[in-house]
Image (cartoon, rainbow, N blue to C red; front, side, top):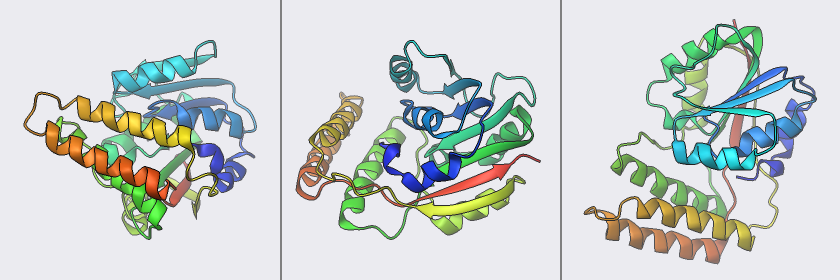
Length: 242
């Protein structure tokens, strides 16, 4: 995901000094890379994820940089209490089945009055290009669930706002935003997303579901090339730890 196209988000966090920064569910490292460039400053950076393949991709992305990447669950983080000044997490809440332990861990590892930024795509009000992205996301989620990995539909604005309010974290600011349109037919991006989809289908090879999802993936890739791709609106919560 090209977070650099999310100019509202970039402008909102550019005034913060992140200090010791942790990105939870770092994935391929895309949001962490964006955040490191968007914050006014930072002193140290760490990221964690429970997907070994994604974590290796992030390690390749950050080769030669002072980023500590750790294989760990977000529900049992291997850090001392109240260590981090800032915690970020993007597009990961819908990958985590039990959210209350996640919020408990945020509270534990973040300093008192520390900054917590949660950014999530919204599952509503799509344009045709955004619907193309969501078809891709739904297919990825279906295959993850077939593989025993929890992956639900993203939340609506009402759903995620309710969850955040129940977390006992203090909402400093909340805003919805969209990426700038950019080049929805970007060949490199379409190819990268197509490759990720094919790779996910390959994980099902040898199962009863392989050919079903292989055909569904071909349909989605065909739509990539027909309509282009534009990611859905996002909501960002800027929170303070209690």
